[in-house]
Length: 329
Image (cartoon, rainbow, N blue to C red):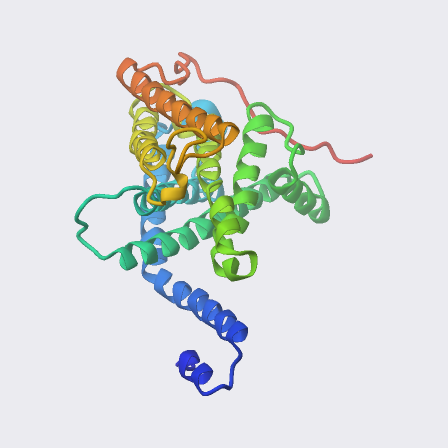
């Protein structure tokens, strides 16, 4: 059991600063425990996605096989499939985290089926789970690269897999030259932004709120990475359309969040007037609201028209192989 920090402080054994830091440490540990059921559900979803990808690859129906015909044996490329499965469940949990965050920070519905405290706890636990899934996604991708580089010695294979996965600009093949750095940016921003909540007493609530807004950028980068590099959504079809459809509620909630923020200080108001921001800040805020509105219209146009950037499936599979590093002479 955790010590009763409040009673210790009341008796004068803990100074106020130490009381607050202890409370934050307890909150992080309690959130980790609370995330266990959520993480269990994520593992179950990941296993189901892995099974589906495995069966589709084994049958030859997988879009991954259409993109990379050499990947026709799921027993050989199971680590790649597991990386994909972690990536899809991670994106789903990131979606839920963003939706919960926008509901909490926006005007919100008049009545909720659960308390606000429960929503805030779910927001924190889904965030922790999403970060864990992202980490598993990249680690399995690195493991697959290490397994593939059979012509290199073990030390060189480990370095090649690590560099391709974690060093921006190192991956040098095809779409991955752009998609991999985008995914790396999402990962390297997600972890500190997700954990800043637990040290907000050190940086101040105002600074934490300003930094936390960039979480939506992390999510946008994750979706972009998936659209560029997710072989299951390269081609036109329902998987890619569903991925676009899922972004509509996020964009709508973000529009509501900007149009009617919960905090009075964030409302647009009249520029320079009472309750309104100064002209430069007002212009920036108004521009952001217009940009998000344009994104909503663009998403709806993509979904309705069916022109979502997907590639036409080729009549003959491309003769592609993954990139490889030549052994040093």
